[in-house]
Every structure is written in structure tokens, then in C-alpha cells.
Image (cartoon, rainbow, N blue to C red; front, side):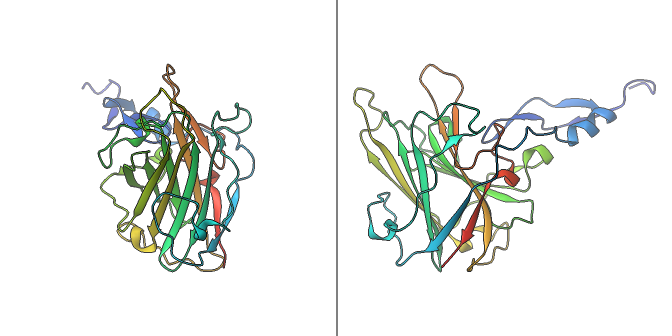
Length: 273
């Protein structure tokens, strides 16, 4: 390249951010000025209100992970608020109800969710596939709020999961580590209706997740929580509408933008006795 030509650098992996994953595009040549701008994320839209908070109480007994929520151990756990659009109340109310509840004990964080779904659908059966190509339920966890890294887990109505670790948000140059596994994770789904049968109307599906405190150890040294420990957490539901090429994104604590990878806008998980 002649000396008076545009001097640039090659950015090997540029892409656009979808709600759950970075979609890679072709390599891009950027000038030094453009590269500086590329590294600095664009300002975000104003937050959609104050992040929500959930007080998670200790379980009186270990939860049996089978996907059903009518068990004794869940009886006194409170539901979250119903999920809203990812951008908040400026967008229409979700078509179907979604809510979650949580418990903890000496070994696990337990998560349960109830998803109203008139036509339960799921096709993906390969672990660590891009689960949000199906309707799905997603968990975003930041056990160490002061650090950049965080964890994501997605699952569909077939109980197929995708777990990954991000060293920092995509807009700061973060990378998704799909080799990460939540060691010891337990999950289950209960279908209340028929799967992949559009001739009837289904009530929906429920799920349970048990994440051991040791599951994060390969990426972060996360202490076991105690009374008063606070994590950042959010939940997302991806819902595809027939004939619509764009998915709906419904969440517990609204982000204000169509981007789940803004951990500072997630809700707070406060551990209580």
C-alpha cells in the first residue's frame, strides 16, 4: 500500500448484535480514526426505569428438578413481576404471560419459570446450538457485579440447553465462550399441552433449573452466597410469531434497548434467609 494511501487495520471479527449472540460478518478494514470509534460503544438509550430486585429465600428442602412447580418446596417462593417487552412499557404488553421464582440452599441456586404458550414448539436438540432460534427461556447471571465477566444460559421446551461465558459485554469487545459448561447443572421441562401440534391450544410449559455454586469455577472464583449477598440477574424470553421474521423479546427487568448484554441494567438478586 503506498505511503499516502489510507492506513488501516483489519478487524477479523466484526458483527451485529442480536439479543442473544454476536452474528459474525466479513472482515472489515478500518482507518485508525474509525477503529477508535469502533472500540467506543455508541451511547445507549435511557434506561427503562430502575432495575428490579428479587429477594431469594433459602429452600426448606432440596428441590426435585422435574419441571413441575406444584411441589411443596416452591409453595412459599414469590413470583417475579410478569415479564415485559425488553424496551419497557413504551412497547406493547407481551402476548403471553411469563414469570419466574427462585430459591437457594447450600448447594444450588434454583430457578423456576412458567411460560404461557398456546402452541408449544421446539425443534433444536443439539446442546450449545443457538437455542433462541426456537422459542426459549434465558438466564443472565453476574455473580461478581464488580467484574466484567458474566454467564448466560438458554433452554427450549425440549430441555435443550446452551451455556456460555462472556468476558465482557459485546459493545466493549467481549467474546462469547461456548466451550464453557455449567458443571453440575440440572434442568427439566414439563409440557402442559402437546409439542409441535398446532391443531390444539396449549396452556404452556414450566421449567426448573438448579445451578450449583461450583458451576462457575472454570471462569470465575465465585464465593458461595450468604445473607445479604447481591448478584445481578435478568431473564429473557424469545418468542417467534408465525409469519413475522423478527422475534419478540420479553424480560423481567426491562433493558430500555433491544440488547440483553447490558449487565448494569439487569435486576438485583438479593440472598435472604
